[in-house]
Image (cartoon, rainbow, N blue to C red; front, side, top):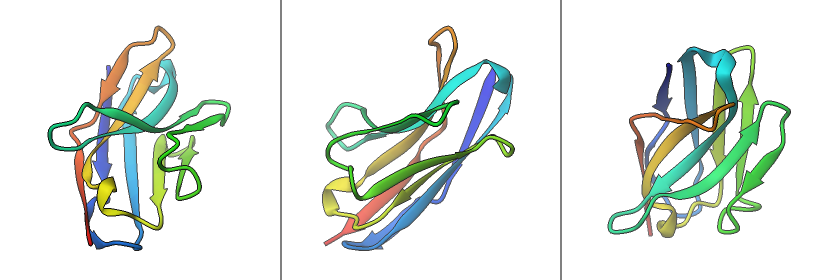
Amino acid sequence: QVQLVESGGGLVQAGGSLRLSCAASGSIGIINSMGWYRQAPGKQRELVATITNSGFTNYADSVKGRFTISRDNAMNTVYLQMNSLKPEDTAVYYCNARSVLRYDYWGQGTQVTVSS
């Protein structure tokens, strides 16, 4: 089992920045990649960014150039630096850890609200 705890959400004006953190604990040795997903009201959960153990990153087109995902393997923590935030970035952001067997673990979610 893997436990994920997110922090760093909040309310910010358009153009502002936020940094999300996600700390993993438990059977972290089975984790192959970590990432962030988000879900806005009335919409499906969507990928924001992922990072593998080797550091390979993948971003949704909507956040490229604005968001940066990084990982501190020693601290078992993944970060999402969000710059130039837009109202359409408003959503609940979920931390994800995918095991080598492609099983997904999820955090409890953290609210990000961007006001116009």
